[in-house]
Image (cartoon, rainbow, N blue to C red; front, side, top):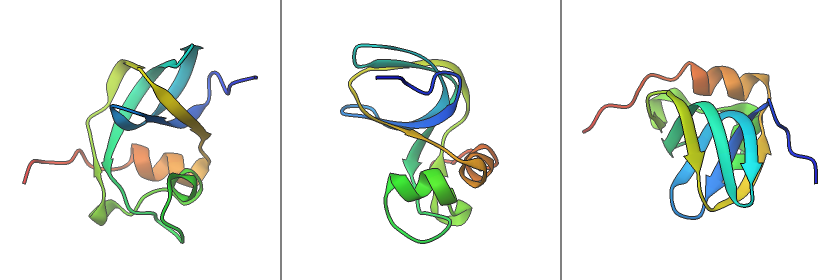
Length: 101
C-alpha cells in the first residue's frame, strides 16, 4: 500500500481522536504528522456529516473546535488516513484555536 507521504491528511485514531497535518511517515499503526491540529469537534463546511466530507469541504468555523498547531505529533492506533483537498486545508488551517468554555 502506498501512503500519501508529504500530503496533508486527516488521521483517525482509535484512542486519541482525529488529527490533521502533513503525513511524514507511518510505522505499523503509528503515523508521524507535522504541523498538526486536533479536530476536537467538527461540522462540515458543506454537505454531509463525516470526516470524508470534512476532507473535501472543510469545516464550519463557528461550530467546530480545533486545537493549536503542534510541530510534531506521533498518533498511535491509527485506523483511517484521509487525504484532504484545497478547501478543507484552508478552513482547518484558518480556524481559530478553540478556547475552553
